[in-house]
Image (tube, rainbow, N blue to C red; front, side, top):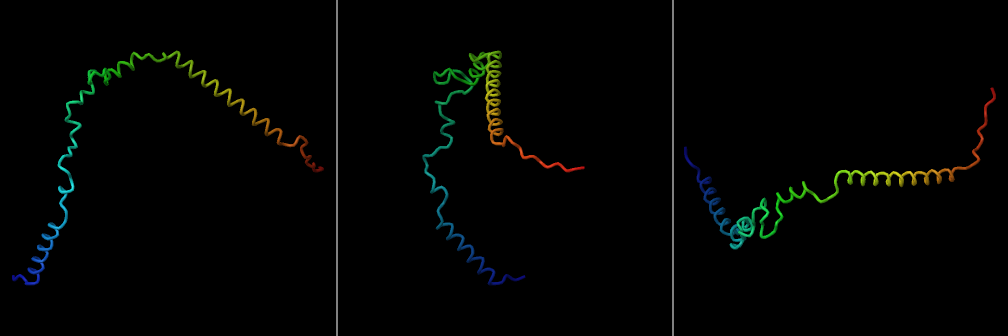
Length: 122
């Protein structure tokens, strides 16, 4: 089996073209500066443990959040339920008021003397 000169020539030309193009095209590492460190924030000594309450003198952490949620200085269940019931009653009263107003407007818009419909004789 003999290698044809055309295939060897095209292989050499292709190799030369790829080599020249790789030299002419900008390399990815040229576009990046060397002083960028994407992991800089993760390796910093300033970042404390998010689970501890002693984070740079700040007494707020995940466990502190859970503790505050459990103890909570907010309203207790009875206060919350009564507040929700009052809001619900107020909203229902407003709805009924608007409903009555719309019914009155509809009644005023309809004629008071309805047109008599003729009755068919038997």
